[in-house]
Image 1 (cartoon, rainbow over the protein chains, first blue to last red):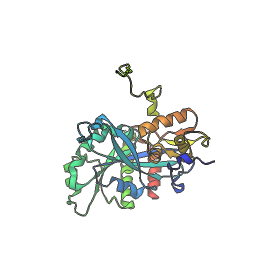
Image 2 (image 1 turned 90 degrees about the horizontal axis):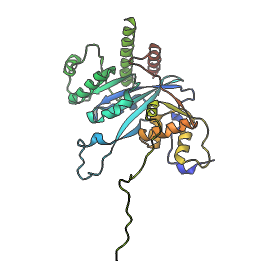
Image 3 (image 1 turned 120 degrees about the horizontal axis):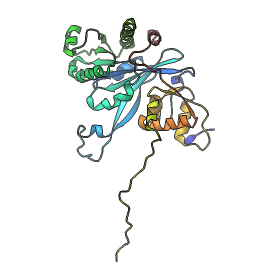
Image 4 (image 1 turned 30 degrees about the horizontal axis):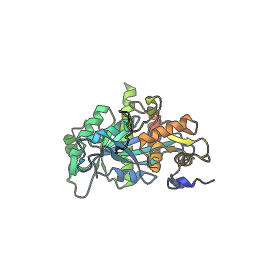
Length: 206
Length: 116
């Protein structure tokens, strides 16, 4: 029978359904400032149109968000866009884009628990946006690669200059990226997997 | 004439929320835990629960359920845990990765990405 009361809660389109054999999922987090292209990158490789999951922020925003005129509002909603790639009939990869600002770090606990690793998406026009993020990831021990999303009007720096400016360890991979391109965005994810592979084999040799 | 005034006990909780017996339970779920319905929606069920069962006919992650239901994950976690505990949903836990993932898992991920 039909349940008419919930028709507005549509659920996934038939073509977006996972096979019944999907047994487990892994996740990768894409971190970067607003407008750096996180959702563009997720959308470029995702098999579903990127979706949005929300979390409410309460005290974390007090004193930081401008509450003038809405003093009674003590909660703010933070949205995270994400996409999905079915890797095979059993394994699914989810990609979560999350803002890098310190006031959103409360989202990170559940997000990074069990994540394979992270991609830090960098916009060379606003390099300083990612400084805190890099420190936070290093502190948490999350393996990451840095992807430089090049915009037409971006200043051109060499990777060495960028590595110096970001004070990155020699071992951290840096890759150029056009977040609009499926191939380029896939290569960023492959660079992360290759890096994880190296880290894991190095550890096993020790 | 003075209107009688009901006096309330103070403090008086505006609302009372019960969030399950064991707060540790919440850590059993992850954004990428997959959920599968164990039966079809039943007549008279809350529409939200019926909607969750229907969308989980095939496996679906908590993140996707949250997006389709427009419910924040903090709230949805409680609903889903309850549905698992009452045997309405099966939860398929994500692959646990310690500090570094397993080689075979990485190979499977790379292989899948290369086919994109």
